[in-house]
Length: 397
Image (cartoon, rainbow, N blue to C red; front, side):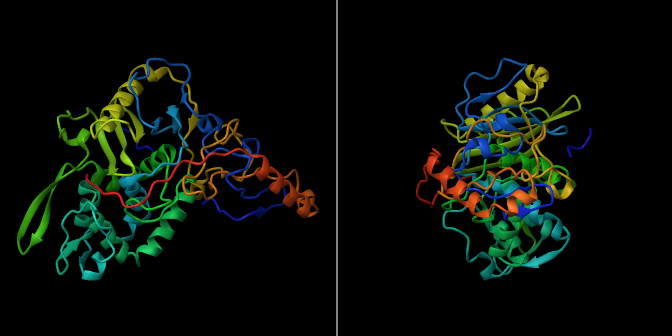
């Protein structure tokens, strides 16, 4: 089976084109949508195939081909929502390759002092020594915020890790994402989207360690001395827990839950040499619904979705040659025809970037005109941001 293969926020003045960041109130006609204009539209986006599952209650979802990056179908792909522990995929994309898996680390009280109350934990104890591999098992299998914080402290601290994660998100062109904590716990303004989470998964699955961890069902975890205890992956489609059967061909990736975010999940499965990615965010029903709806969308993708024509694409990282949002629109990065969802935190959505002016001379000679134009656009735009509830949710699984 074939492996499935930063945008600066600052204004750039180039010789031939330029881009200036606008507020979330910028009109859709001035926006460039990451992945294609249809992904900015509300509602279901699909063409060339029918038969989508009838009972999809998620606030946002997306189905994509992992290798080609084609988005086969989506619903509110760029809607900014609380990601819960699916944000740990971005944490892994950022930190995973920095430490050898055999490296050993003795945990201190300080490493665990800043874990939010109510977090999901794998059971790390200060004074014990763990391998990096064991810490990542705690992250992927048990969604342990304690394991995340230990690795973040090894990486120089939580604040620095958050900054690196934000920079990584921008390089991946996951511009709906605003990182507040490395663990995905509920914090005001911590947001992502089905599109961005799918980018994180696709990028992570290129790495053998990432792929191995997210597909591990059980592992023995240190309990002190020579004692261990078994931990099991909380991905129910992988393990078949809570009344669900295992999904044929599933290879990961990451689930999440908080009281604010509800249930979120990005899953990847391979059948017949083809790997699909599905992200489901905030279904209305209880905890199994996120897995059931993911499975239903995977079934569709492997079945009737084979005839689907792309409605967008998962873009490549800027550092790997991906066309940035500040560049001219292409088939992969098309001009928006409809407005994108606003930020729940009330801050500008970073994936909205203005197209460059016709030329450098015009830009350099018309600074005051550009400022007046931006102010005018802001006054006339009609943007309704997502509501934001109070922070302080609890991880349960």
